[in-house]
Image 1: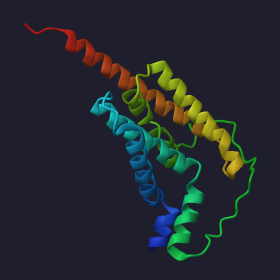
Image 2 (image 1 turned 120 degrees about the vertical axis):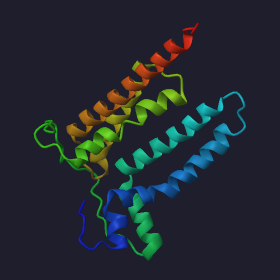
Image 3 (image 1 turned 180 degrees about the horizontal axis):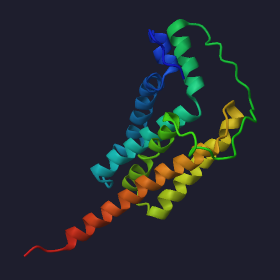
Image 4 (image 1 turned 45 degrees about the vertical axis):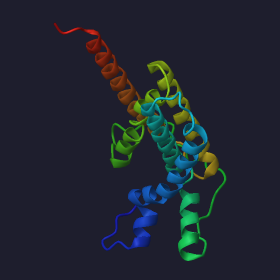
Amino acid sequence: MDFFDSISFTDFFFNTYPGYFLQLIPITLITVMIYYLVALRKNKEIPSYRKIARVLFVCYIFGFLGLTLFIDRIGDMWYWMLFQTGSGHVYYPLTWDCNFIPDFITRFNGEMLMNILVFLPFGILLPLATDCTWKKTVLVGVILIIAVELIQPFIGMAFDINDVILNILGLLISSTLFFLISKAIRVSGDKRIP
């Protein structure tokens, strides 16, 4: 990703992380509205906080998958809608440009920090949306992380062990903190103050 001296709308929208995020907002909002209307609106048994957590979790997962697996396809859709032409992306069905040796310690950069940050919400939103335990939260997160990384070579992206390790680190940080804090709140709530 390049940051330009004099950035145009097209450069910003199609070549920066904030631009990718903006591309996903309308699609994610439509998905979340459909999910809410179909799955949650009429269900009176689910508490409001859990409905909100489920909507946020669906929004997060859709955004995560959009950024990790479908960003080129979504960018092409926007390019066509804005300019009525193709973007010129060439898709290679399989790439073997894979990194199986972790090297994030010697060359840590902003993209690697983003790999940690992208999974911080997962460890909080999944247990809020469901009744998952810490083990189940971590297991589901690890399965999602590995599945996404294994799919990437088949859609023209690269498998990177750094992404797997750093995503899992973000998942472990957030889920551990969430469960420790929620346990502390439950314990302090049980004590009676004289």
